[in-house]
Length: 91
Length: 91
Image (cartoon, rainbow over all chains, first blue to last red; front, side, top):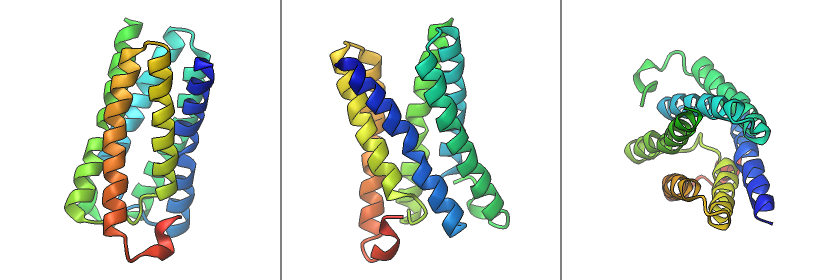
């Protein structure tokens, strides 16, 4: 039963970023999204993947690779749409 | 060594949300942040905490409680600042 909570938790914290990808793509704006958050989070995800590979934890690897794809998409969209807004870029 | 990667990963994916809290508080705007993302993510974090408690994984509990506090703060600030922007609230 405890495992069910873990899988459900992983599903939710992974899929959560899809609405942000869709919203950013639709509105062509992510000025309010912190670049520093995305950079720290993406770096963390890479270390989760390294940890998952090192400890043969396939669910950890899979969940974090999907979350990584979503977050790299958000960061790419943000940087693409915010090119001319250097002032707020790193806040 | 693998454990080090795990702890470092947990540290980064936890602390990542602090810049977003600070940015949202400073700019008084989180229109570009998806409410659906925050709601799904917060729900996921609650299930991570249940999972952590059920499997006596203290680091999982601690990391997710801190991440939960940050994300509830972001959601609260967003809802407070976006009161009059019902149109974009759920995108």
